[in-house]
Length: 134
Image (spheres, rainbow, N blue to C red):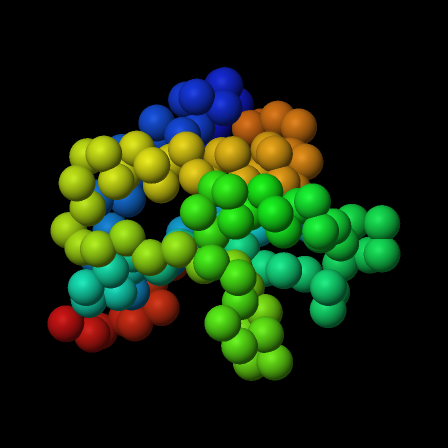
């Protein structure tokens, strides 16, 4: 996304999310981790995988990582047998405070939980999951 600072990345995300349309999806990848968001009709859904099914043993989330996700406001996977991802929902439309919180949440999760070392390593994938809808 950016080659600047973590603060600039958080601001870039905060500026982007209020303009997302229904179905717009943004994946922020810091291999092997990701934080993904998708605009739904009445809320912005944000997820980060728990990862035990696909991460190497030395990169799996620890109990400390999971506790930190809780402290950041993430909800544990509601049904890990179906979707094993932590989640947050923000009501739509987003306030500027919520947009800033989304930017900070994504950056802190990538840095503090997943160990991303530089915003230059974060890759953005953007698409609409519901083309032609609405």
